[in-house]
Image (cartoon, rainbow, N blue to C red):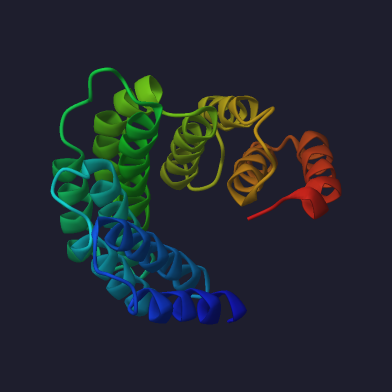
Amino acid sequence: QAALEAFRRALERLADLPDDERARELRARIRESIGDVLELGGSHDEAVDSFEEALADRTPDERLARGRLLRKAGASRQIQRRREDAVELFDRAVEELGPPPSPSSQEWDEERAAVELGRIMLQYFTSTPDVLVEQIERSAPIVEARGTALQRALLFNSMALLGLRRERYVASARTVEHARAGYEAALGVEPRLEVADVRFVYAFSLLWAGRLEESERQLRELRVAAPRIAA
């Protein structure tokens, strides 16, 4: 709440300044930050409204920022299980990002991979395993080529979750292999909630594969690491 109030006060003060390019840029950043805070608090509709307001302050040539805002709005709709809205927003995000820039940009690569991970999560929560398989097959080459170590870990994580669903939670060796690949890809990544999720899915897969001691060891290690994990 304190963060929201601070951002909103900043917007009020900004309204008293000349409405030039610098003010527009700062206003867009503040509105995006407000959307992030609202999203974390579960106020999804308000968050999407704030992302759309930030989008209105971005010029057509600010493709990376525009794509990021649309991807964040899509992720919010995904959490709400508003499937069609999320699909449209992710598609718009890809359109706004456009083709890979020259010279290459790590920020662009990471954002493009983030859209694909959003699409995968949308299908995981709203579609059948067969549809999810098709989405992973389309998205995996992009995430593997352009994603960060954490994003590649999340890709393997989604493959493991798919395996568990298809196998009715009697985990095959292949599913455990995917979960372990995610775990290994996340080694060395700064502790955060997504890393904890990857590690939990590895422990969860070991559990459903009947490898109880290994699963328990992973869960104990995760519990010890929990205080260091940041959002």
